[in-house]
Image (tube, rainbow, N blue to C red; front, side, top):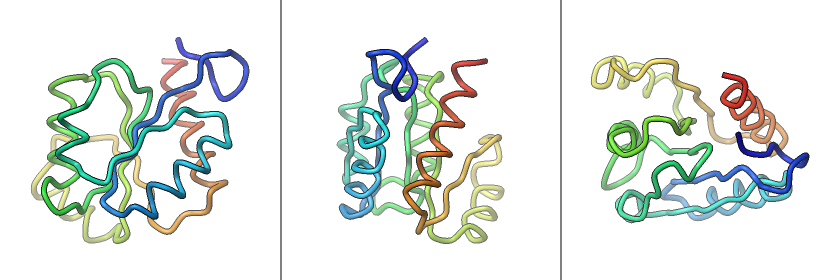
Length: 136
């Protein structure tokens, strides 16, 4: 079990994949200030190519990206590492809920963050998901 956000010296590692540089930057700063270690990519293909299995505690994954959508990237990551928790990010909750149901029904228990989100809310959701993982 990895350390939480402060009690142990080992920080939880979070991968952020979003094609918008400003989103990656804002999320990375907010999470680093909350004592998480973050790595971010704006290129989803490069994120997949450089993905380290069993390294990340959590992935923040944008759904709408130009080369590989977030659901497809999730499936590819799950083939490499089925243990890492994933939180999806979207600007349009309704569209992607129906898109997921139609094209990716096997993805259950999705945690979804809708853009924009306040930094405090982001950190709270990440802490909740990581705590749930550590206690399972």
